Picture 1 (cartoon, rainbow, N blue to C red):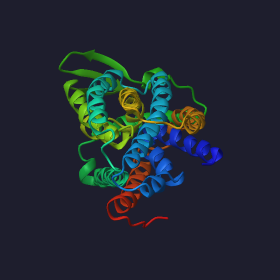
Picture 2 (picture 1 turned 90 degrees about the vertical axis):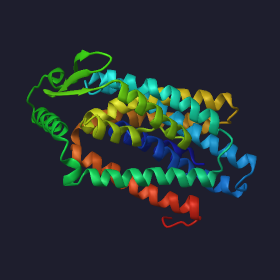
Picture 3 (picture 1 turned 30 degrees about the horizontal axis):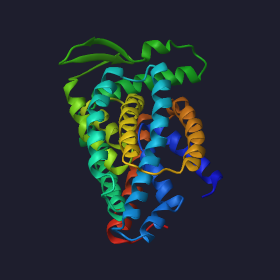
Length: 320
């Protein structure tokens, strides 16, 4: 594997995750499986051989190292920018600890690469189709608050770009009240609220699926945050990043404790790229509209989903 290619790919992974709040693990997986050829290597070992399953677990753990590092940097940057809903991220993270541990513990060494690749693609494809519906008039009907906040934030950014000084703290997240049954906060002057129990349960389910797939879970967390919690994408990215970080730490520790081997030369090279991409992402995301960020998400989901379902379940390559 070319160290230059792995470095450049890692910059892309760090950028997309820190910008959208998702798809870092998916893109890391695409890199390890397809771009670097580990998927073909795993398949050459035989579907149900122990080594095939060990390589599969190694790919999952490698993905998680990259996403966890990006999550650490991204969540810190978004918090400083006032674009991270800390109580919501903590609630998701609490649930993530349970789900990530259970999934990694009970599936390590038991899943062949073909099955892993197929399920990887299936989850991503279903998500892409759901998000496509969500951008339709019917899907947008219940998102008045998210639209209002996104519009106010975009207008503030336009003023900033034109040289006008703005008070960034005034448009950032401000928690107004927190109880065991309700948390209230504002963003760009728009008030939001949620029940903390819901994200804990959501965190358990999402992190269990994510740990099985060897990804961060942002591709499920972001729809959860934008649909169920009705947040604008500008808040979903940072909030997702912190929840993903907690899940990744739990899953990595569990896989390593089960004896999963890792290529530290490859991971070390990629982590340098991840740091660069993750620093750039939060600083550039404000220049993309809320709608454009969602469309980037959907295009990637449909492309990866269709390709990997066909490769994993039917051994058919339609793309490349």
